[in-house]
Image (cartoon, rainbow, N blue to C red; front, side, top):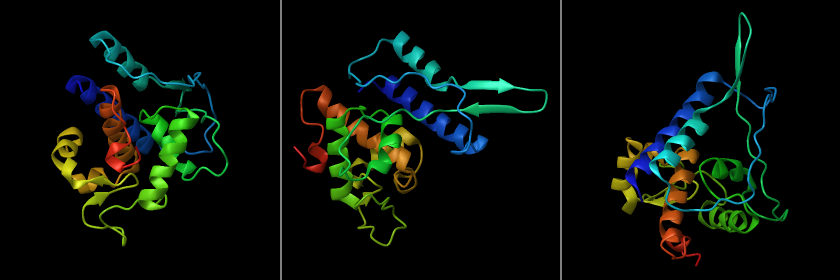
Length: 191
């Protein structure tokens, strides 16, 4: 994977999370703008200009100002239609926001993965069910410690306890394998 692309995606994800945490945007916020969301996402190498354009687009928000207040609103994408019995659907908006394809087949399999690994729980290093080597909702194994710590610039226990970063790293594992023609689900033995 291109390290520059990975760094931009990581910084953008972190910035969006920080923006959300700082502004305190909650579900009660008024939706000002909802950009259209494509139903499929194709994976491929991006040019430096495309990377820069995507980073700018991810950082762009809709802002309205008055003399005393500023409101920033980010809209969650519409989730692809999946069967009602699909497990762990509560994680799909987060997964899509960090890069997982918004298509029924991928989301159904992701739901099976999250159910198989943690029963939809965020099993971090402080959780009573923590097994000592797999972290978070997607159960990222400690064999990835060096890569995770380099990517997120924080200890693995801390970064993989954050469901957003955990699902982001899970997508990076999935997409790295899928881009080379392999089965992206291999790290979780779902191939």
